[in-house]
Every structure is written in structure tokens, then in C-alpha cells.
Image (cartoon, rainbow, N blue to C red; front, side, top):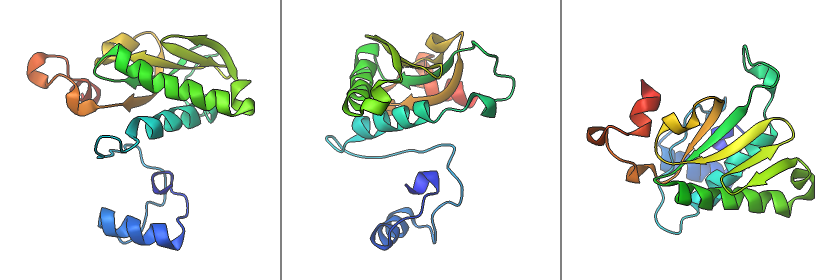
Length: 162
């Protein structure tokens, strides 16, 4: 909620301020959100929900120079494609649980979900190079601490920051 600059109820506001060290929540949506949570903390479940929310709320007109017919991609990156497919399975589950969202799915493959608004959620390993040829509108990095490091020459976060 706070990451999207939504108003927090008083009990959550107190917790937010205690954990974040901030006096007040952000006044506009954040561009980058890092979540530190232990095993079983619901990270994959939560970021899969974020993937679906970003996909259904995508507005093609908000992206400068985005051409009609150009693919808008939400890249779901994990240490392996099979691990990214676990997150994609959660995305698929969210679409199946909500009939209004399920109707938006036009194509459902093992490594991708395509929505009627032209957004594709794709499962990727830990390299942005696997997302070539599409407009990456959102990058979800699941278990990024297990991505190869810069010495291995394949660090996704280093590739994104350059």
C-alpha cells in the first residue's frame, strides 16, 4: 500500500514508520521496491500479485513512443526459468481466482501469460538478455540474492543499472 502511495490505516501507518524509519509514507508510487523477508514470508506470492496488478493496469498511452502492436512485457526474473515459472503459476492462480481477470487472459503457456491489453508476463532466468525484442515495462526480481554475481558476468541488477 505505502509503495503505491495509498493511504495507510493508523495501525499500519505506525508499523510502517517504525520499520522504515520514515516520518511519513511516500506521496507518489515508488520506482523501486526491495523486500527483505525470510523463507515462507510470502515474497513470491506478493510479487506475483504485483505482476498481475501491473499487467491489468497497464496503459499503453503512458509509455512514450510505444507502438501499436509492440509487446509490453513484465519480466519475471528468478535464478532459473523453472523457479520463475513458480511465480508465474501464482500469477496464473490469481487470474483463475478472479473471473474478471481470467477473461483478460488470451494466451496461457508454460513460461508466459498474455492479456488482452497486450501485456505479456514472461518467466526468465537471471539475465535481461532473455527479454530482448519486447518493451520491458516492469521487472520482477524474485530471489535476486541468488542471482550470479558480477564476477560471473551475468548479474541482472548490474545489467539494469547500467
